[in-house]
Length: 93
Image 1 (cartoon, one colour):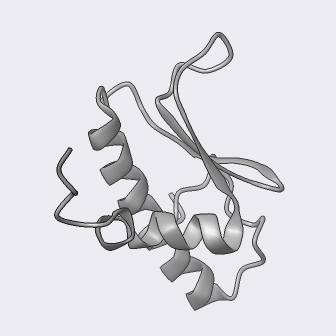
Image 2 (cartoon, one colour; image 1 turned 180 degrees about the vertical axis):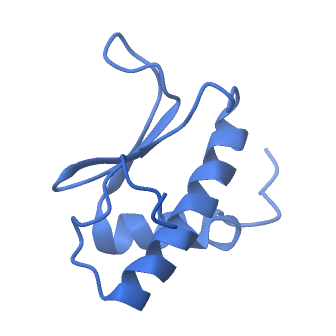
């Protein structure tokens, strides 16, 4: 077994921050969800992968990009942790 060249925390710093500070992620599909990956906090679902993300790698990159913007937006507006929900994108659209 070879050791990966990069650590998860280096590739996905925003996901790592989310897990350490804000909530958790779920990976996998079941009868309740068709998304591969979901970001959740105490208030509920914040983000889920779309049908366009057909691999875990694609979904992780999409989540990383979303959470990077989410943290930027949250700090810029000093949002409370539960203020950005799945229906509202970080850019407000």
